[in-house]
Image (cartoon, rainbow, N blue to C red; front, side, top):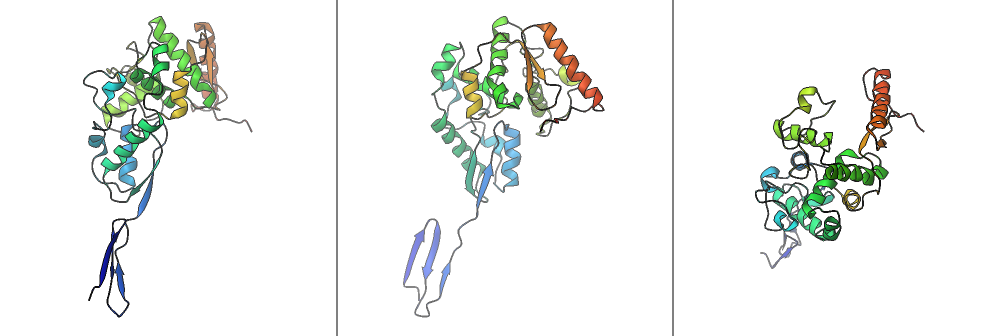
Length: 277
């Protein structure tokens, strides 16, 4: 005969009769869902599925009553919440819906970022949504933390000059979307570089129409506080250690490109390997 019952944190604990036996319904397992900075919706969808969440993450992250992109200056018809899905580690019950992950990400964005950078966006003649888009480019391009504000300067300088910003990370994003494949990688082919997409920032002027990833705080701050320099170009350093070489003139840029190509050729056609201690 059951003499007492209680519901504790979602688990029903039933205390049995004088035999002192009892039955405890086990709480669901908690999983840590790790979303790296710079992940795209396609990449997060794969993470969510791998960690046992249920449902379609791409559908769940199209829109939400928790956050309106238009309040950040996003144009009407913005297709999804790319950029607002804050990267962090989330503890969620195994088998829970992807809706829970999206909710947690949007709440984290509102808490940690929200409209705190609106004034800086205005000072840079950007909408907050454009600042978020700039941060997403920085997140996918920068390897060395110190390069982040320099990349921001290059993009803003090129926007001001009215020339294509030429960010290859945006082309990789276009290929991800076109192929519905989060694993697009390797050297871009000439065909890739000519993809007919508004995310092709070699052939289209201005920022891409949406963020191309979900950036972290460091890239958001770099976008808001770019280096004060006249940089117009950058290319990966020939030492292969991740640092970009920044330049003001096309001549210096071409010289830096030549050094990088020579390093690739010397490494058998593969990117140079960093040999610094």
